[in-house]
Image (cartoon, rainbow over all chains, first blue to last red; front, side, top):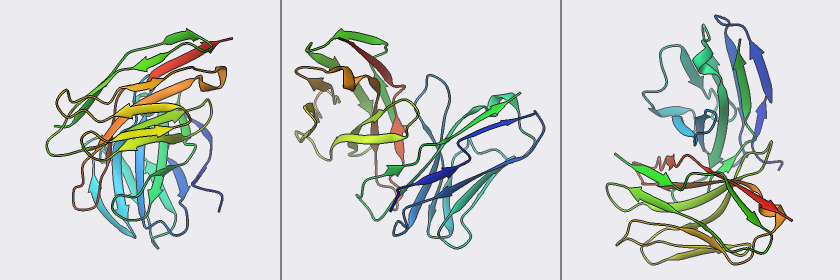
Length: 113
Length: 114
């Protein structure tokens, strides 16, 4: 198992374009999280899935953001009509049950120009 | 709400120096506490954790003790190495119907000079 995989590693997009990121968690991990990390800050929680169900969304996740985990395996995070303020590192993490440790991916760095 | 305040950086030390990075927290309930490390170009890695008061987490020579009375979880290492250069994040989680999302501090960048 190669851990949590995120693609792409880097994405540069023009303001107003849509972007989609993918996260492949560790196969036996049923819980999946997205976090956002802006420069000089710690990661902030965006959303949480248990299997295919999205159980919690942060207020940070505006209407332009949508996340899915259609078969309880990989997940996608889409940002529509990107803005410069969306520029950040988007981190995915997965874990098994209650009390288990997180495993983080290396992240997708988004730059909106 | 829940929050974590950690020592602002950057911190620059000479090799073999003693390291302390301060971390305090505010939480409703009984959090678990964590230190994560982020090396350049990599994701966050769990360094150590403690799940209840007075627990001591330790790993790779780093230690931190969960102090409920001072709401603190300071990271220490007796003799740092150049390879310890990284960004360190203090974090907490509280179980909420199985979510246990993490709340992070702003991070402390540590640079060790040979």
